[in-house]
Length: 274
Image 1: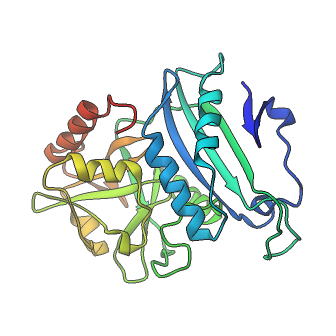
Image 2: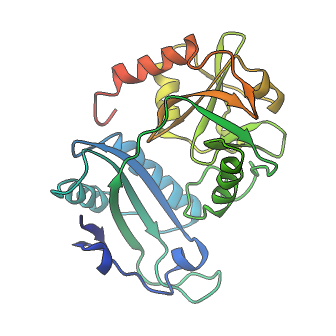
């Protein structure tokens, strides 16, 4: 299956970028991941809008979203596209001198797809000893600098968990390596606010819109251990119940509030661009 690079569909083996590309050299880029079902990307407008916000947060030039939307359509029309696919849209600062300083050339734009693996019905998570900096320059920006997530996810898998969860520097719940976290406390569905340093997840936003009574509120880390229900949200997971946190079994997975979120998502996710 071909991918799209800087204006043209190419075979993956010919999808070459400069050895001086700032996205490769220092991780100076932003990206989005979309779920594609039967050739139709889900919530593409929301993803492209967040891509633009991330580019602005990183100080990159304005992204031509119309060009990227057309590129997505070309990739999604590929005859070998799987029925369920993960679509990746990446924008980097383009070629630059070796080091932190940017060059003055054009950005690198890249769209590719791959089969979408199915998630388990429930999962275990562990908390990691490294906090997210909610006051950092890149807090809430979806950049290609993912090494911290790679290390944290490896830490979780060494402990037979599927996801790692971060606190922030204030000791409150932040997010997972590739997910947002919801908890049920005293019957109330809560997720950390964006001020906690978490990414403004597209699925997170939809759950907040679609599930009556869901709120944003700081969650002290001890409350995660005491929550009666926990679930993760992400573009590829939708809503995934958590059955264990740091080895402690969660009472029910999915519990009644989690089930309500799952049902609301299934019922309203039929529209491809909500």
